[in-house]
Image (cartoon, rainbow, N blue to C red; front, top):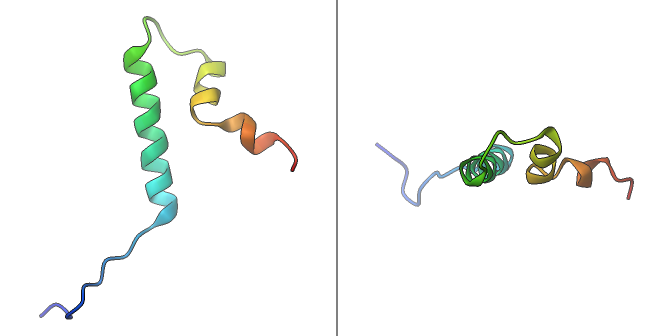
Length: 53
């Protein structure tokens, strides 16, 4: 029997990865040709991670 009140667990890392994959799919479907590595990095916000804060 399932406990009352729910046991929903959120994996925030997995949710972030799913969101980034979705954004990459949208960018790829809107592009006329293959996405460049620079474009992929922009969609995945790689440059933001490399900047020292």
